[in-house]
Image 1 (cartoon, rainbow, N blue to C red):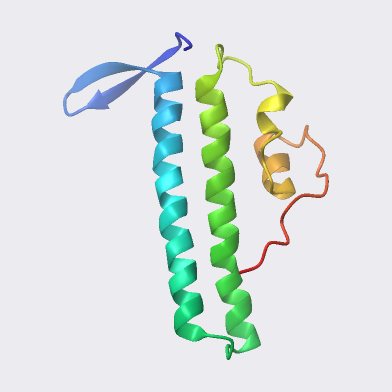
Image 2: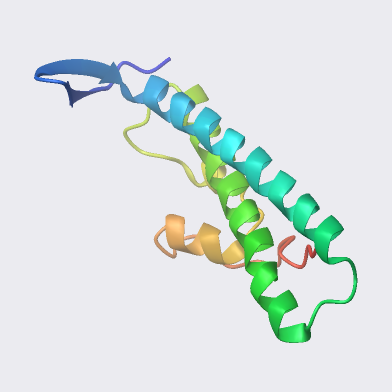
Length: 122
């Protein structure tokens, strides 16, 4: 685990937290959010069936996009937390990102927007 730490304020005290540990905790939280979002997608699908207006279906598709973004960021944080040095992330840390636009934004545009698994509809 890496040794870089950040200082956070908890109550009225400052505490040191290892960046890798924080990244792992954030990854876990996002993974839980993904599970909640996927459950909501399933519930909406069951409640609405197949008779959904096109405009509403397009808006509801954004929930799937949100779920995929959360999953990608959770995976990225998990990979970062497993690394030895968080000072400089290599391009490989972005390899697991499925959404090409997210990959481009998080890498600062350094990683090309290659085709990805974005066309995953629910």
